[in-house]
Length: 120
Image (cartoon, rainbow, N blue to C red; front, side):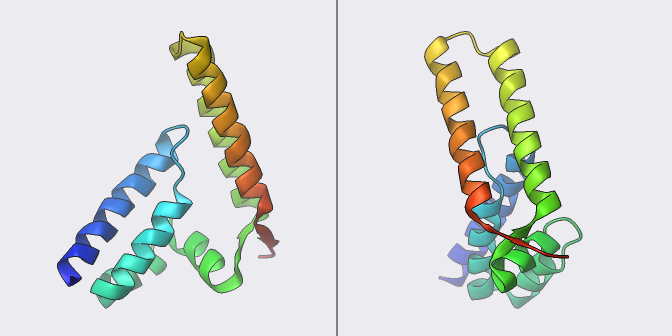
């Protein structure tokens, strides 16, 4: 079972990294799942993740303080909408997919805004 959790954690780290770059793919749920998986498989990987320069502060805020910092919310929503709008206006041709992307952006925005804003 330990190998399963280790592989799951690594896959989630990959997907979280892709979530930073791709519209519609969230990073935070994959980070949380990776943290869960590493906590059950490898203390070394769990410590690496929670102390990571990029993901660590976000993950620690979420796990310890149950919220997201304001600047992370702003960056997250801005990148999500920026990438989604670029996709809608330049790469997606079918209207139903455009509307689905916009709907996903609205849902993602609502989800991010629902979390408590933590102070630095």
